[in-house]
Image (cartoon, rainbow over all chains, first blue to last red; front, side, top):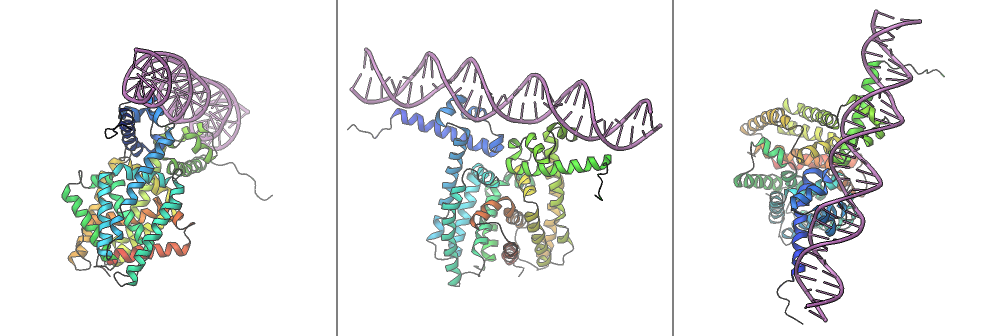
Length: 209
Length: 209
DNA sequence: CCACAGCCTGACCAACCGGTCAAGAAAATT
DNA sequence: AATTTTCTTGACCGGTTGGTCAGGCTGTGG
């Protein structure tokens, strides 16, 4: 066996091009939706011939599916910090923090996800029914425990989760509207203020402050 | 037969067909986005030949613009009840109530609006900069007055509005996700509980309860 | 070195798209 | 009844789309 510490050229090419295509696809799908996006536009943005896209991803739907799945992964890991927290102030506070940072760093991913769900999730329906449902059930139990321990008011856990999702993702999905009302992109201070506002209102709203 | 088919008058025909087309268009645009929607699909859903659509609406974009504008009107009138309220409990409570009812009754409209804003508002950018900005400024002043009068905590008014929009519209835009987790459509009681949950959490979150 | 497998791409295609148009049907006006 | 105006629609068109394919190119293992 030879030393394989250095990656082979072939796999490098493959990985590099796949990444290039996926980044371009995320942007185009976010900006035009599935129907409005064209393989030619994605190819141009990735700097590759269109035929090359079809070498790596057989169909437009396959490419779209990969984009949505990748986003879903990022989404799920945002709540890791929530689990080991002693109470809602730390747990939900950290979750809001994480989701606001994702909204800032991956606005296109959030939009593609929104687009997919809005259109009745034709591609990731099974994920909703399995992974997301299991995830939700787990957090509902966690919140119910916090309520039982008197650490927060007896709110409905599901609707609390919806409010967390809605509010944090709004800064990505409706970023253009917010920027228009703000007369320009949000600064570091603006994002900090937004995060603090959301944290304060929600944590007080659930009686944790 | 007591009912003979009276020939329709010109204005009746026009209004009836425009309504038919607009309803079909709202649904198709919501389900597929602008790029994914086709005039043929809208025509089939309205039960008219495609060429007839182009008689009433010259281009696909004209039709889309009308759909978005109609939704925007409904949107704006939702806050009428907010203005004459003595304080945030009545005012913001009524606004949440109105917006939750719109999310239930016009989920497609909400989705088309979301689609338009997510794609940088190519059609209604001027509305955002004029009408929506003026509307927002007015409500910000109202909230600031309530804060000054000690009727609620000193939260940032803009981020409160974003939270109201995000949370209420989430039940329309992400209705499919909610229904999947709920294992079926929301009942009357479910909607009541959702509205109550949102009201309680937000009103307590702004220190009005 | 060779031979093979993986990578690349210009040219092409059937299907579908938004939009047009001319000719006719139906209602309004005279 | 005759004429004008509005409405209806099948057939059609140029342009674009997702996807294909043959054949050239290149890195890799033997």
